Length: 336
Image 1: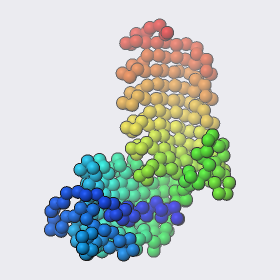
Image 2: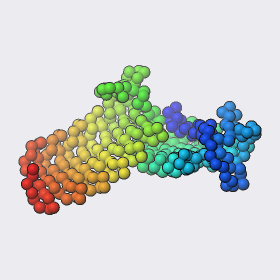
Image 3: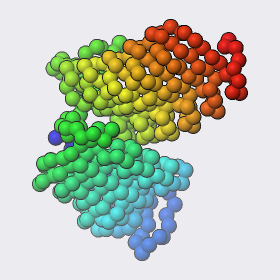
Image 4: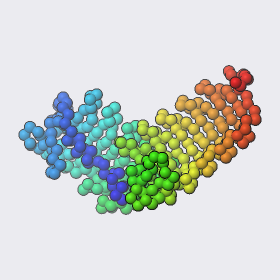
């Protein structure tokens, strides 16, 4: 529960921190309310009131700040020294980062976005706590969790892994952070343990990028990977998805380029390739088709050039090359 609230309550401090930063910008009149540069105001953490630096009076106006490239960084309305109405924050490239609604200084609704523009989380708030419902999304826009809150306390929810399969929300709510374990020790240990109890970990190991976007999710049981595993590129696109049983990769592994295009798809059994395997160029052109038996090439193996034309076709029997044909411009050539 504590980790769930930490996930959702990264909201109001974001505006407070922005209000405290000093950065001089040009002022303009945009509406009937005075338009103010953020460097002209003060925010009092004890009273949560916003005042003019010049005379200490309560602010009434639209406060803004810009990035060095001229893009808006943030803009929010202040009435009688309190946040009121819609507040917005943007990434440096102009993509919206957060939208919030305040009522007389109280945060009532908040949305946060990934840098790729997709919604990250959406939560209703009352008295500084989640109210009614809260949703969290994966970077591709698919639903991660839908939570229900009663009187600020988590009541129920439904959660999904990156493949869209329903999972126990406790995996997400009680997610384990890498710094709580020995996973980053060198060399990487065979059994991942809790740093405090020294017990093998059970649950979902979760690491995030600096902006809060997920980096990887890995399920563990008795200190080894067991269940789904997924990682994301920094731009929010999925990097790979796979599945483990008792520390060994089993099932379909899929890899993706940062542009979202499929990079490879392979079937695994007991941590080695077993079955089909395909790879693609970054533009989606087929690059290779392979077949494996217990980690060894077995059966047909094909290679294609960047234009999608077959350049090599071999046949293997449990890792031994039986025959091979090579092609150039659709014609057979010697294999060198």
